[in-house]
Length: 185
Image 1: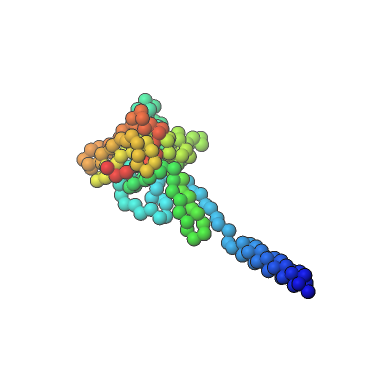
Image 2 (image 1 turned 45 degrees about the vertical axis):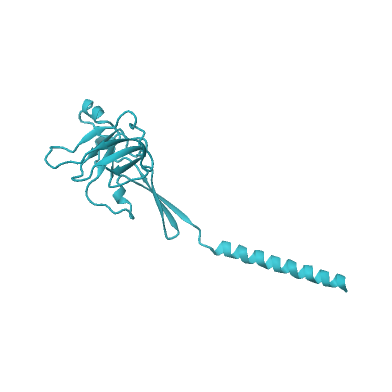
């Protein structure tokens, strides 16, 4: 009799375990899968969760010295407002979708004849900038070697409104093509 009780107990235990596994499997199959979306933008103000006002720092793919020695050429540009902890981009969940915005150089929407595009167009900004322009009327900026505002840095003052052009500077030898973040200065 005891042996029959053991068999009955084991049989019920197996049935309970099987039911538990089936329930877990059905939950996993019915859960909505997480999705991911990646976008490329040339201006961090195009990221929906970033609030911007006027006063962008422009990073350029080529140096000002290169552009002066190659009249008529242009360069890829990317614009950023405010503190940017990582030029690689930014990510945030929107519902069940992880949206990632990667920062790239663009050509200001200008269509060049013959399919030509600005040097650097489509290249990622992080560790690819050679110069910076600050057309912000009140905000000074500092560009950093590392993400999260760390390491060597270079300062660029704001535009005072009376100058003919925005302040521009080639990134120094430490930061040229080795730049990862920016901060108000």
